[in-house]
Every structure is written in C-alpha cells, then in structure tokens.
Amino acid sequence: MAFTIEPRGDFEYLFEEDSYTAEPCFVKSYKVGSPSFKEDTQTMIFEFEAELADGSIAKWEVYVEVGFTIEHDVSCNGVTGISEAIIVEYDPEFICVSHD
Image (cartoon, rainbow, N blue to C red; front, top):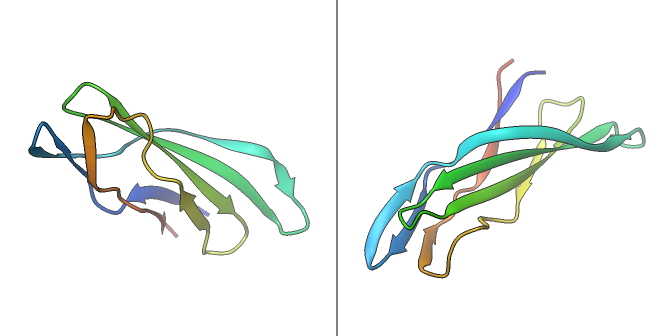
C-alpha cells in the first residue's frame, strides 16, 4: 500500500513580535525494529524539518504504525529544536494520505 505522511497546515510562530509560517518538509523515513507479528504492524519514523526566521531548524518525528489495513496510526510529540526566542502559535498535526 502506498501512502505519504503530510502536515496538516504550516508551522506558525512568533519571533521578535512578528508572525511567521514555515512549511515542514519531509527529510527521511526509516523502520524501527522488526515487525510485531502479534499485531501485524511495524513502526516507521518520518522526519520533517523547517528553517525558521532565527536560523534554527524546527524538527518533527512522526511515528506511524504500518499494518495491512488502509488506516495507519500516526502520532507526533510536536516540534523540537527551536530556540527560546520562538513562540509557537500553531504546531501542525500530521496525517497519513493513502495513494491506493
């Protein structure tokens, strides 16, 4: 089954009292561990990054439980790697988009 992981909107933030947006861009994906035969799933991590106005790089690690069904569980703990000068206004969720 073919699918992609995509952000639901842009990352929105304040820096030095100005509003900015940044688009999380896909960097790479990789499998974590071996498949769980009990549940017929395997965990994959999709990494995204965006350069911010202060020069820092915002990062997201999106965990996806890939199985034999059309639906995949997607979770993300939120943005990391930002400086203290950045105030988050909107941290996008990530969704699985099927291409079947």
